[in-house]
Length: 405
Ligand SMILES: *Cc1c(COP(=O)(O)O)cnc(C)c1O
Image (tube, rainbow, N blue to C red; front, side, top):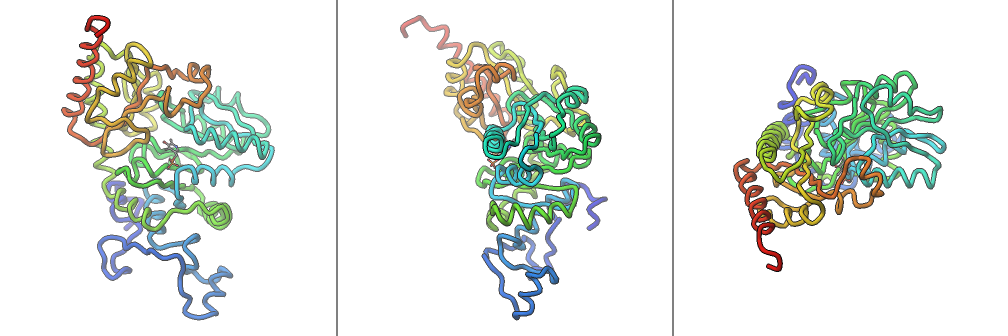
């Protein structure tokens, strides 16, 4: 199959697996093995010497994992990929690979909490410093570059404010200064946004989210624009730090990926329907969604994303108490962090995902105590709206009740 001319919808079903190489099995088999048997001593020696292709040990290669890596490489239009045991294992591997002591990292403000934690560790232990900035324009990125800057690390849309970083602007600045651009593409999935095509060097995913899509795996994927760098990563940081994926989780991700296109279309459609309803609800103050006409960076979002995706946030009238009461009044929609699952999930960044961010930083980022993040699932949209309507109705009844009741 010529992956350059086949649509992503098709690649996500077929790439990386030839049934006739695996006893004609339609599904990629699960190679649940730790090690591989060399037919003779000379073959073992040749594989270790790198003179012969072949499996040695599953921390290095595994056929099920390799199929997943080939599939995600095709979807992101990269030259190679590595699978990890979590999204954070992918983040820590690529940041370790791309920096050394004394370097500086420019990252989008509002990055994922554990990535923020990792930057703090790198700062404390290896004197790798960072600045968290807005990346709305080329000028503001350019102005933040220091002589020791080596990496631009981007999340877009940013959680939970759905702020957009301009990928093309970041790539332009990086080209001028010889920097490595790394993009965490978890919120969009490869179906909606493809940063390698815009010139990024690495893209990563918490495959826990949309790529698996079923809320039952923790995993990460890293895709590179340069095959040699991916091989070097495989044989150094990934091999020696060891944060690999299990063959079974890779097998589940291969299964999940087959439906990514249809899932992303439904997630996006459901988000649209729910947002339309929320905008008509008097207790909702504002909605943040990249494709919304009111979003301050909607033109950038429309340039680099093919759809708005399934995640948005909104603020409700009041603050902490109202936000908590609202969540507790829902029944179909589940209170949980994570995103991209079949189930619609709601969470409260102020007390959950962003509770560790200093209060003044939260304010600067636009995270208030009335903000809620919503990951639209795959349920019928009318049922989601009915659940939200019932929750607002119960709050209004409660608010109207005489004091003391
Ligand atoms: C969940 C998430 C991560 C971390 O991934 P894990 O699979 O939980 O380790 C990183 N970045 C983003 C944007 C995420 O949502």
